[in-house]
View (cartoon, rainbow, N blue to C red):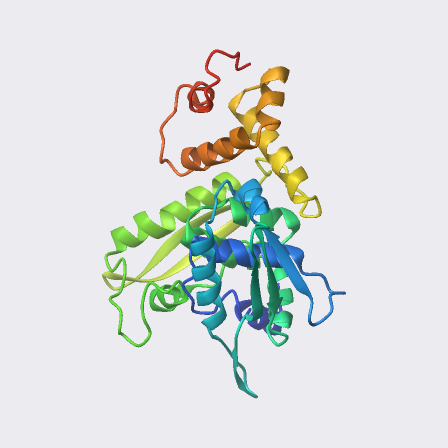
Length: 311
């Protein structure tokens, strides 16, 4: 059993339990930053995020306008940290610089936020960070953060539904915005069930949940967490963006059953075909295209390689 002090620390990871509504793009940037943090980094360390890294790891391509809006919102977002001694307001960035024509951006973190980001990173292995990037639902990403904190216990704390909705920004604490998913059936279908499916399919965690009633109404949620054999090997974050991209592409092709050496070599050696492969896999993963019977054949059609053998 953990001591009450240890549980207190676990429950109050400032970034995990903060109330914020990060988009999928913003969460991807956050997880990329976590993957690059090192204890020996200088306080004014600048971190580079290459756009082809994003595509290689996630299959998603964020455009300049989306990224600019994402970092602008992240930079202005305030994190609140409170304990018995103080109430502190923190912001994420000192600087974000977009390098024109080079396909990457440089980020300098606020010095005061860094200890809390290291605290958050300690909840994740490199594989878990990679898994978090593979999850497409922003709510699933947030619930994965919570579940990762409690994986060695087997279940999370019990979250009051109001607390849970505030944490995921489904409800505005000041009441200025309408509450989302007020019906419990909508909360289950749009948030909880999607999170369970995506986390169980893409990560080393297997989760479930129970909704707790008070009288006739549901008032709280608790998640159950066990570990399972990962469904894919992680991509080392120390790889170069180009290496990670090729490794990820090769694994996608293996997953689809495309093994012909000449065909694989042709796809891996063509930048345009690689881009189309990653877009296809993302659309397939997020159910934007259906290919239950022959996804390999559909991919080859999309790539204009239908006449080539797929196995």
